[in-house]
Length: 74
Image 1 (cartoon, helix red, strand yellow):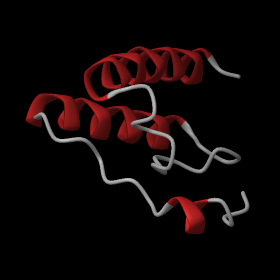
Image 2 (tube, one colour):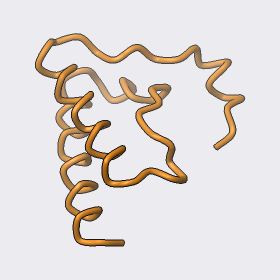
Image 3 (cartoon, one colour):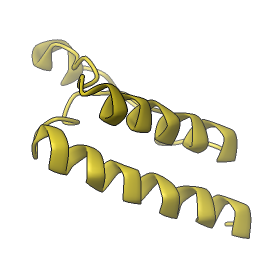
């Protein structure tokens, strides 16, 4: 993993923690922010940006229907 990717992941994890503190422990359970298998630096940065925007607006990101989400394969 490159230094740039490590930095992007660290920044994402920090904003993810802020998001969970604001909206609750299960607030990201069925939210798809990026492909967990093939995410690159840009995709990680975009996911962090979406989380920051939701925090700033005070509106959580929409969650997918749990029944449908459980059938998604990555």
